[in-house]
Each structure stands twice: as structure tokens, then as C-alpha cells.
Length: 276
Image (cartoon, rainbow, N blue to C red; front, top):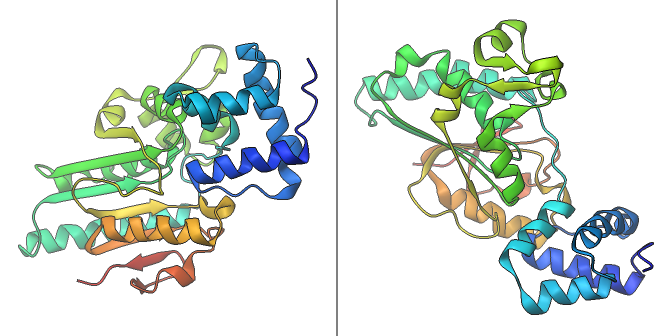
């Protein structure tokens, strides 16, 4: 079977399908990348053509296969303490402010954090580490740490809490010793079980609202680079809706959503706060 490369027509069909499912708009120059990623899936399934696989996705609409397809075409790259200034703000400003508000009885002793599009979990576990380092200040609090991603494979990996060496490149030796255990033969690191127990992970598409209670802080960083304007608008409105009054939204430098955050008060280049 000839699975060399998608034709331009096949590429257009697949990227239209990807856009409808995820909001990700693939550029014209991504035809080789998409061909390579789909081709691996076809060989796993012993499917003879790109067209047959497209028909499988769009006509039979098998939920599990759709998950495999999304896993194959989405890109996930992250590490602990990525863009360290965001976590310094979280530890040095956000958490003390929340604690002071509770001490003054201006808010309950509860805290809900969401790492949206969390990939394999490094961002949420970084937030868990920041919280653990000041845990005595939040003893008795009801704390919820949620990570979500459109990829079920990434969610499964996050729940396991096992990471390659490169994921810890920006983690201090002290934190490595305290919060991780090195795997045999220097094959990576596993995060301590008590950190895993602090975190919950679930599959979620940013184009759909997140159900449940509002969040005090949402991290959404370096996710929207492949989203077009319409998809960004939908996802941003869902995020804003999920923020509690006074809640903080932390965004990445490459997201290009600043002009969509007019409902929020800009505090810094990365921090926006929802009015009370």
C-alpha cells in the first residue's frame, strides 16, 4: 500500500476534521507532519489508505479511535517550572493573598486550581509542589487541583507521574530529592505518591464548557498557537466562565489571546483577574 503522503485534497479533509474536533487549525506547511503521524496509526491498524482511515473516523465515529487519532496529531511538550516567574507569582503573591482573605473571613478556606491543556501533568504537579512547600499555611483547607487535556494518552501519563529526565531540567536538586524518585538506570523520574494524591486529571476539550464549580486560578499557557480566531474566542469564553469572581487567569507568551480578555482586568503581561 502507498502511504507516502497525503494528497492536498486528503490533507484538507483531515485538517477540517481536526479543526471541528479540537479547534486546532493546521497550517498548509504541516502536510508532511500530519502524513507521518497518521501513517503510523494506519500501520498499527493495517488500514490500506488515508481515505479508508478518514472514512473510519467520520462514518463509524468510534470514540476510542477518535481519541487515538487526536493523540497522534496533537503535540505535547512541557516540563516542570516552565516559565518560572509564573510560579514565583503563584507562591509569593497569589497564595499569600488567598490565605490573608481567608484569615479575614472574606473567603472560605477552599482553593480550586485548574491546569487547562495540562499535557502530561508537569504544570499541575509544579503547582502541587508550590502548595506543598507552604502546606502548613493551608492546613485544614479544601484544596482541589485539576488538570485536563484533550488527549487521553496524556491524561493517563499524568496520572502515572513518571517523567523523562528532560522534564526536570529546570527543577532544583533540592526539589528533585524531596519530590521525585529516580528510576533505575537513570531512565527518568517518578513523582512522590503524595503529590499524585493531591491531583486529579480528566479529559476535556477546551471548546466545551468545563462543568462544576468555578476556579480561583486557571493556568492556560502556550496552548492557542494552533487555534484560529474563532476557536480562541470559544475557548477563552469557556475559561472566563469557569473563573470565580476575583479569580486569576495565567496565560502564556505565545497564546495571542490578549485582545480577547477584555472582560478581565490585566495585572501583568501574563496575569488577568476576573472582576468581583
